[in-house]
Length: 457
Image 1 (tube, rainbow, N blue to C red):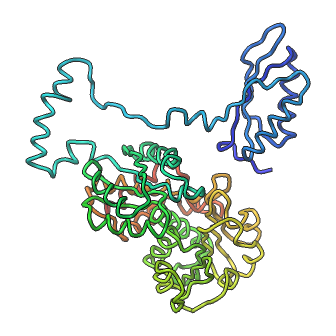
Image 2 (tube, helix red, strand yellow):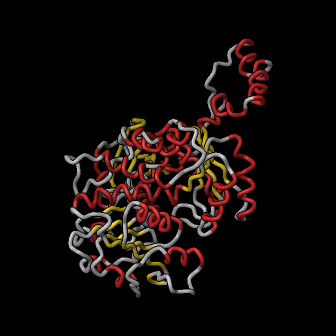
Image 3 (tube, one colour):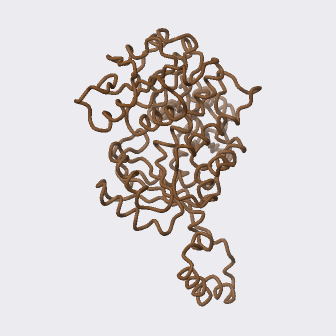
């Protein structure tokens, strides 16, 4: 049974008879129920009772309930309390504001606030170009969502999106020392979202659009890029595209193929798929075919929605028609940003030798990575429990670090290409392997390399 310790981890407070053999019994019972015991502590020991805290992992919430039930069935053991460690971590939120300056006496207040702050405000009124230098604007990003496409959960609204946006802000701080703020808007109207972001923009050095459904996200990004003098970056599109191109660059190094001579099939014509296609073509790919619910997208299909018709017009140069299986015949690369189970493992055997499969739908990929590995030379997914995780955390912190440091006003395709190549280059020739085509998100060199690439250094 596959186990994801970090996502579904619980701690059980157990009351048991004063027999230390119960410790082994509990661990064995958890294992027999398919769980993994990661910690067991004796909290209290008395002549009539042992109190144990047992932490274990499970595959999902239903599995964790079965593990608890199995422990409850042990003679002499009572489950007093069960705590979900993920929910405990979220209590009170994951981010906070701290002052960077001391506020211990009147002298501190006089400089940090009134009257001293008035001099700084007047200086900025006279020289507005210095706002980024003398305020948090120079190191701040707004993480903006309408809650319409949150992770793989769909349209769950701005309140339910808040934990994800908090997490994004925490990642900005951890990996690039950027102060990011969750902005969850109570509207899914394009005009209202654009207006809201325009109104808050003076306080930020960049805008990170997040989890906004297609095709609405395309118009929002385009209009904000036109109206604002700070960079606007839709991470679901461009962050994903950067990391996919980085991983594909190294995967093609493994199988000794060039991007320009590679036939690529992209499953999913939404925000991520469209951005991936655009960056692949900008990077030198010449034969890209997109599959979505309408089938393989063709430029002469006038029944397609406007966004997909645009996508079809720049792809499928051979005019391939049919379903996903037809598109995969002889293809070198599959990139999935669609949904679970759309790719049958046996279809991979019909691709070209040295096939590369990126099954990136989360949490359930287009094909089981273990099954895909039976037919493909290189396999990647969006999951952390398999090799080659394609994770946007590799891109967006360094991208915004570079944008803020350069006081950039826009994000260009050349920047995205440089960022992708910088991530790929972190993996040395000695490290490169079918199971290691992309660096860990914790690799210390990645944010700096990406930031330097964005700055053009």
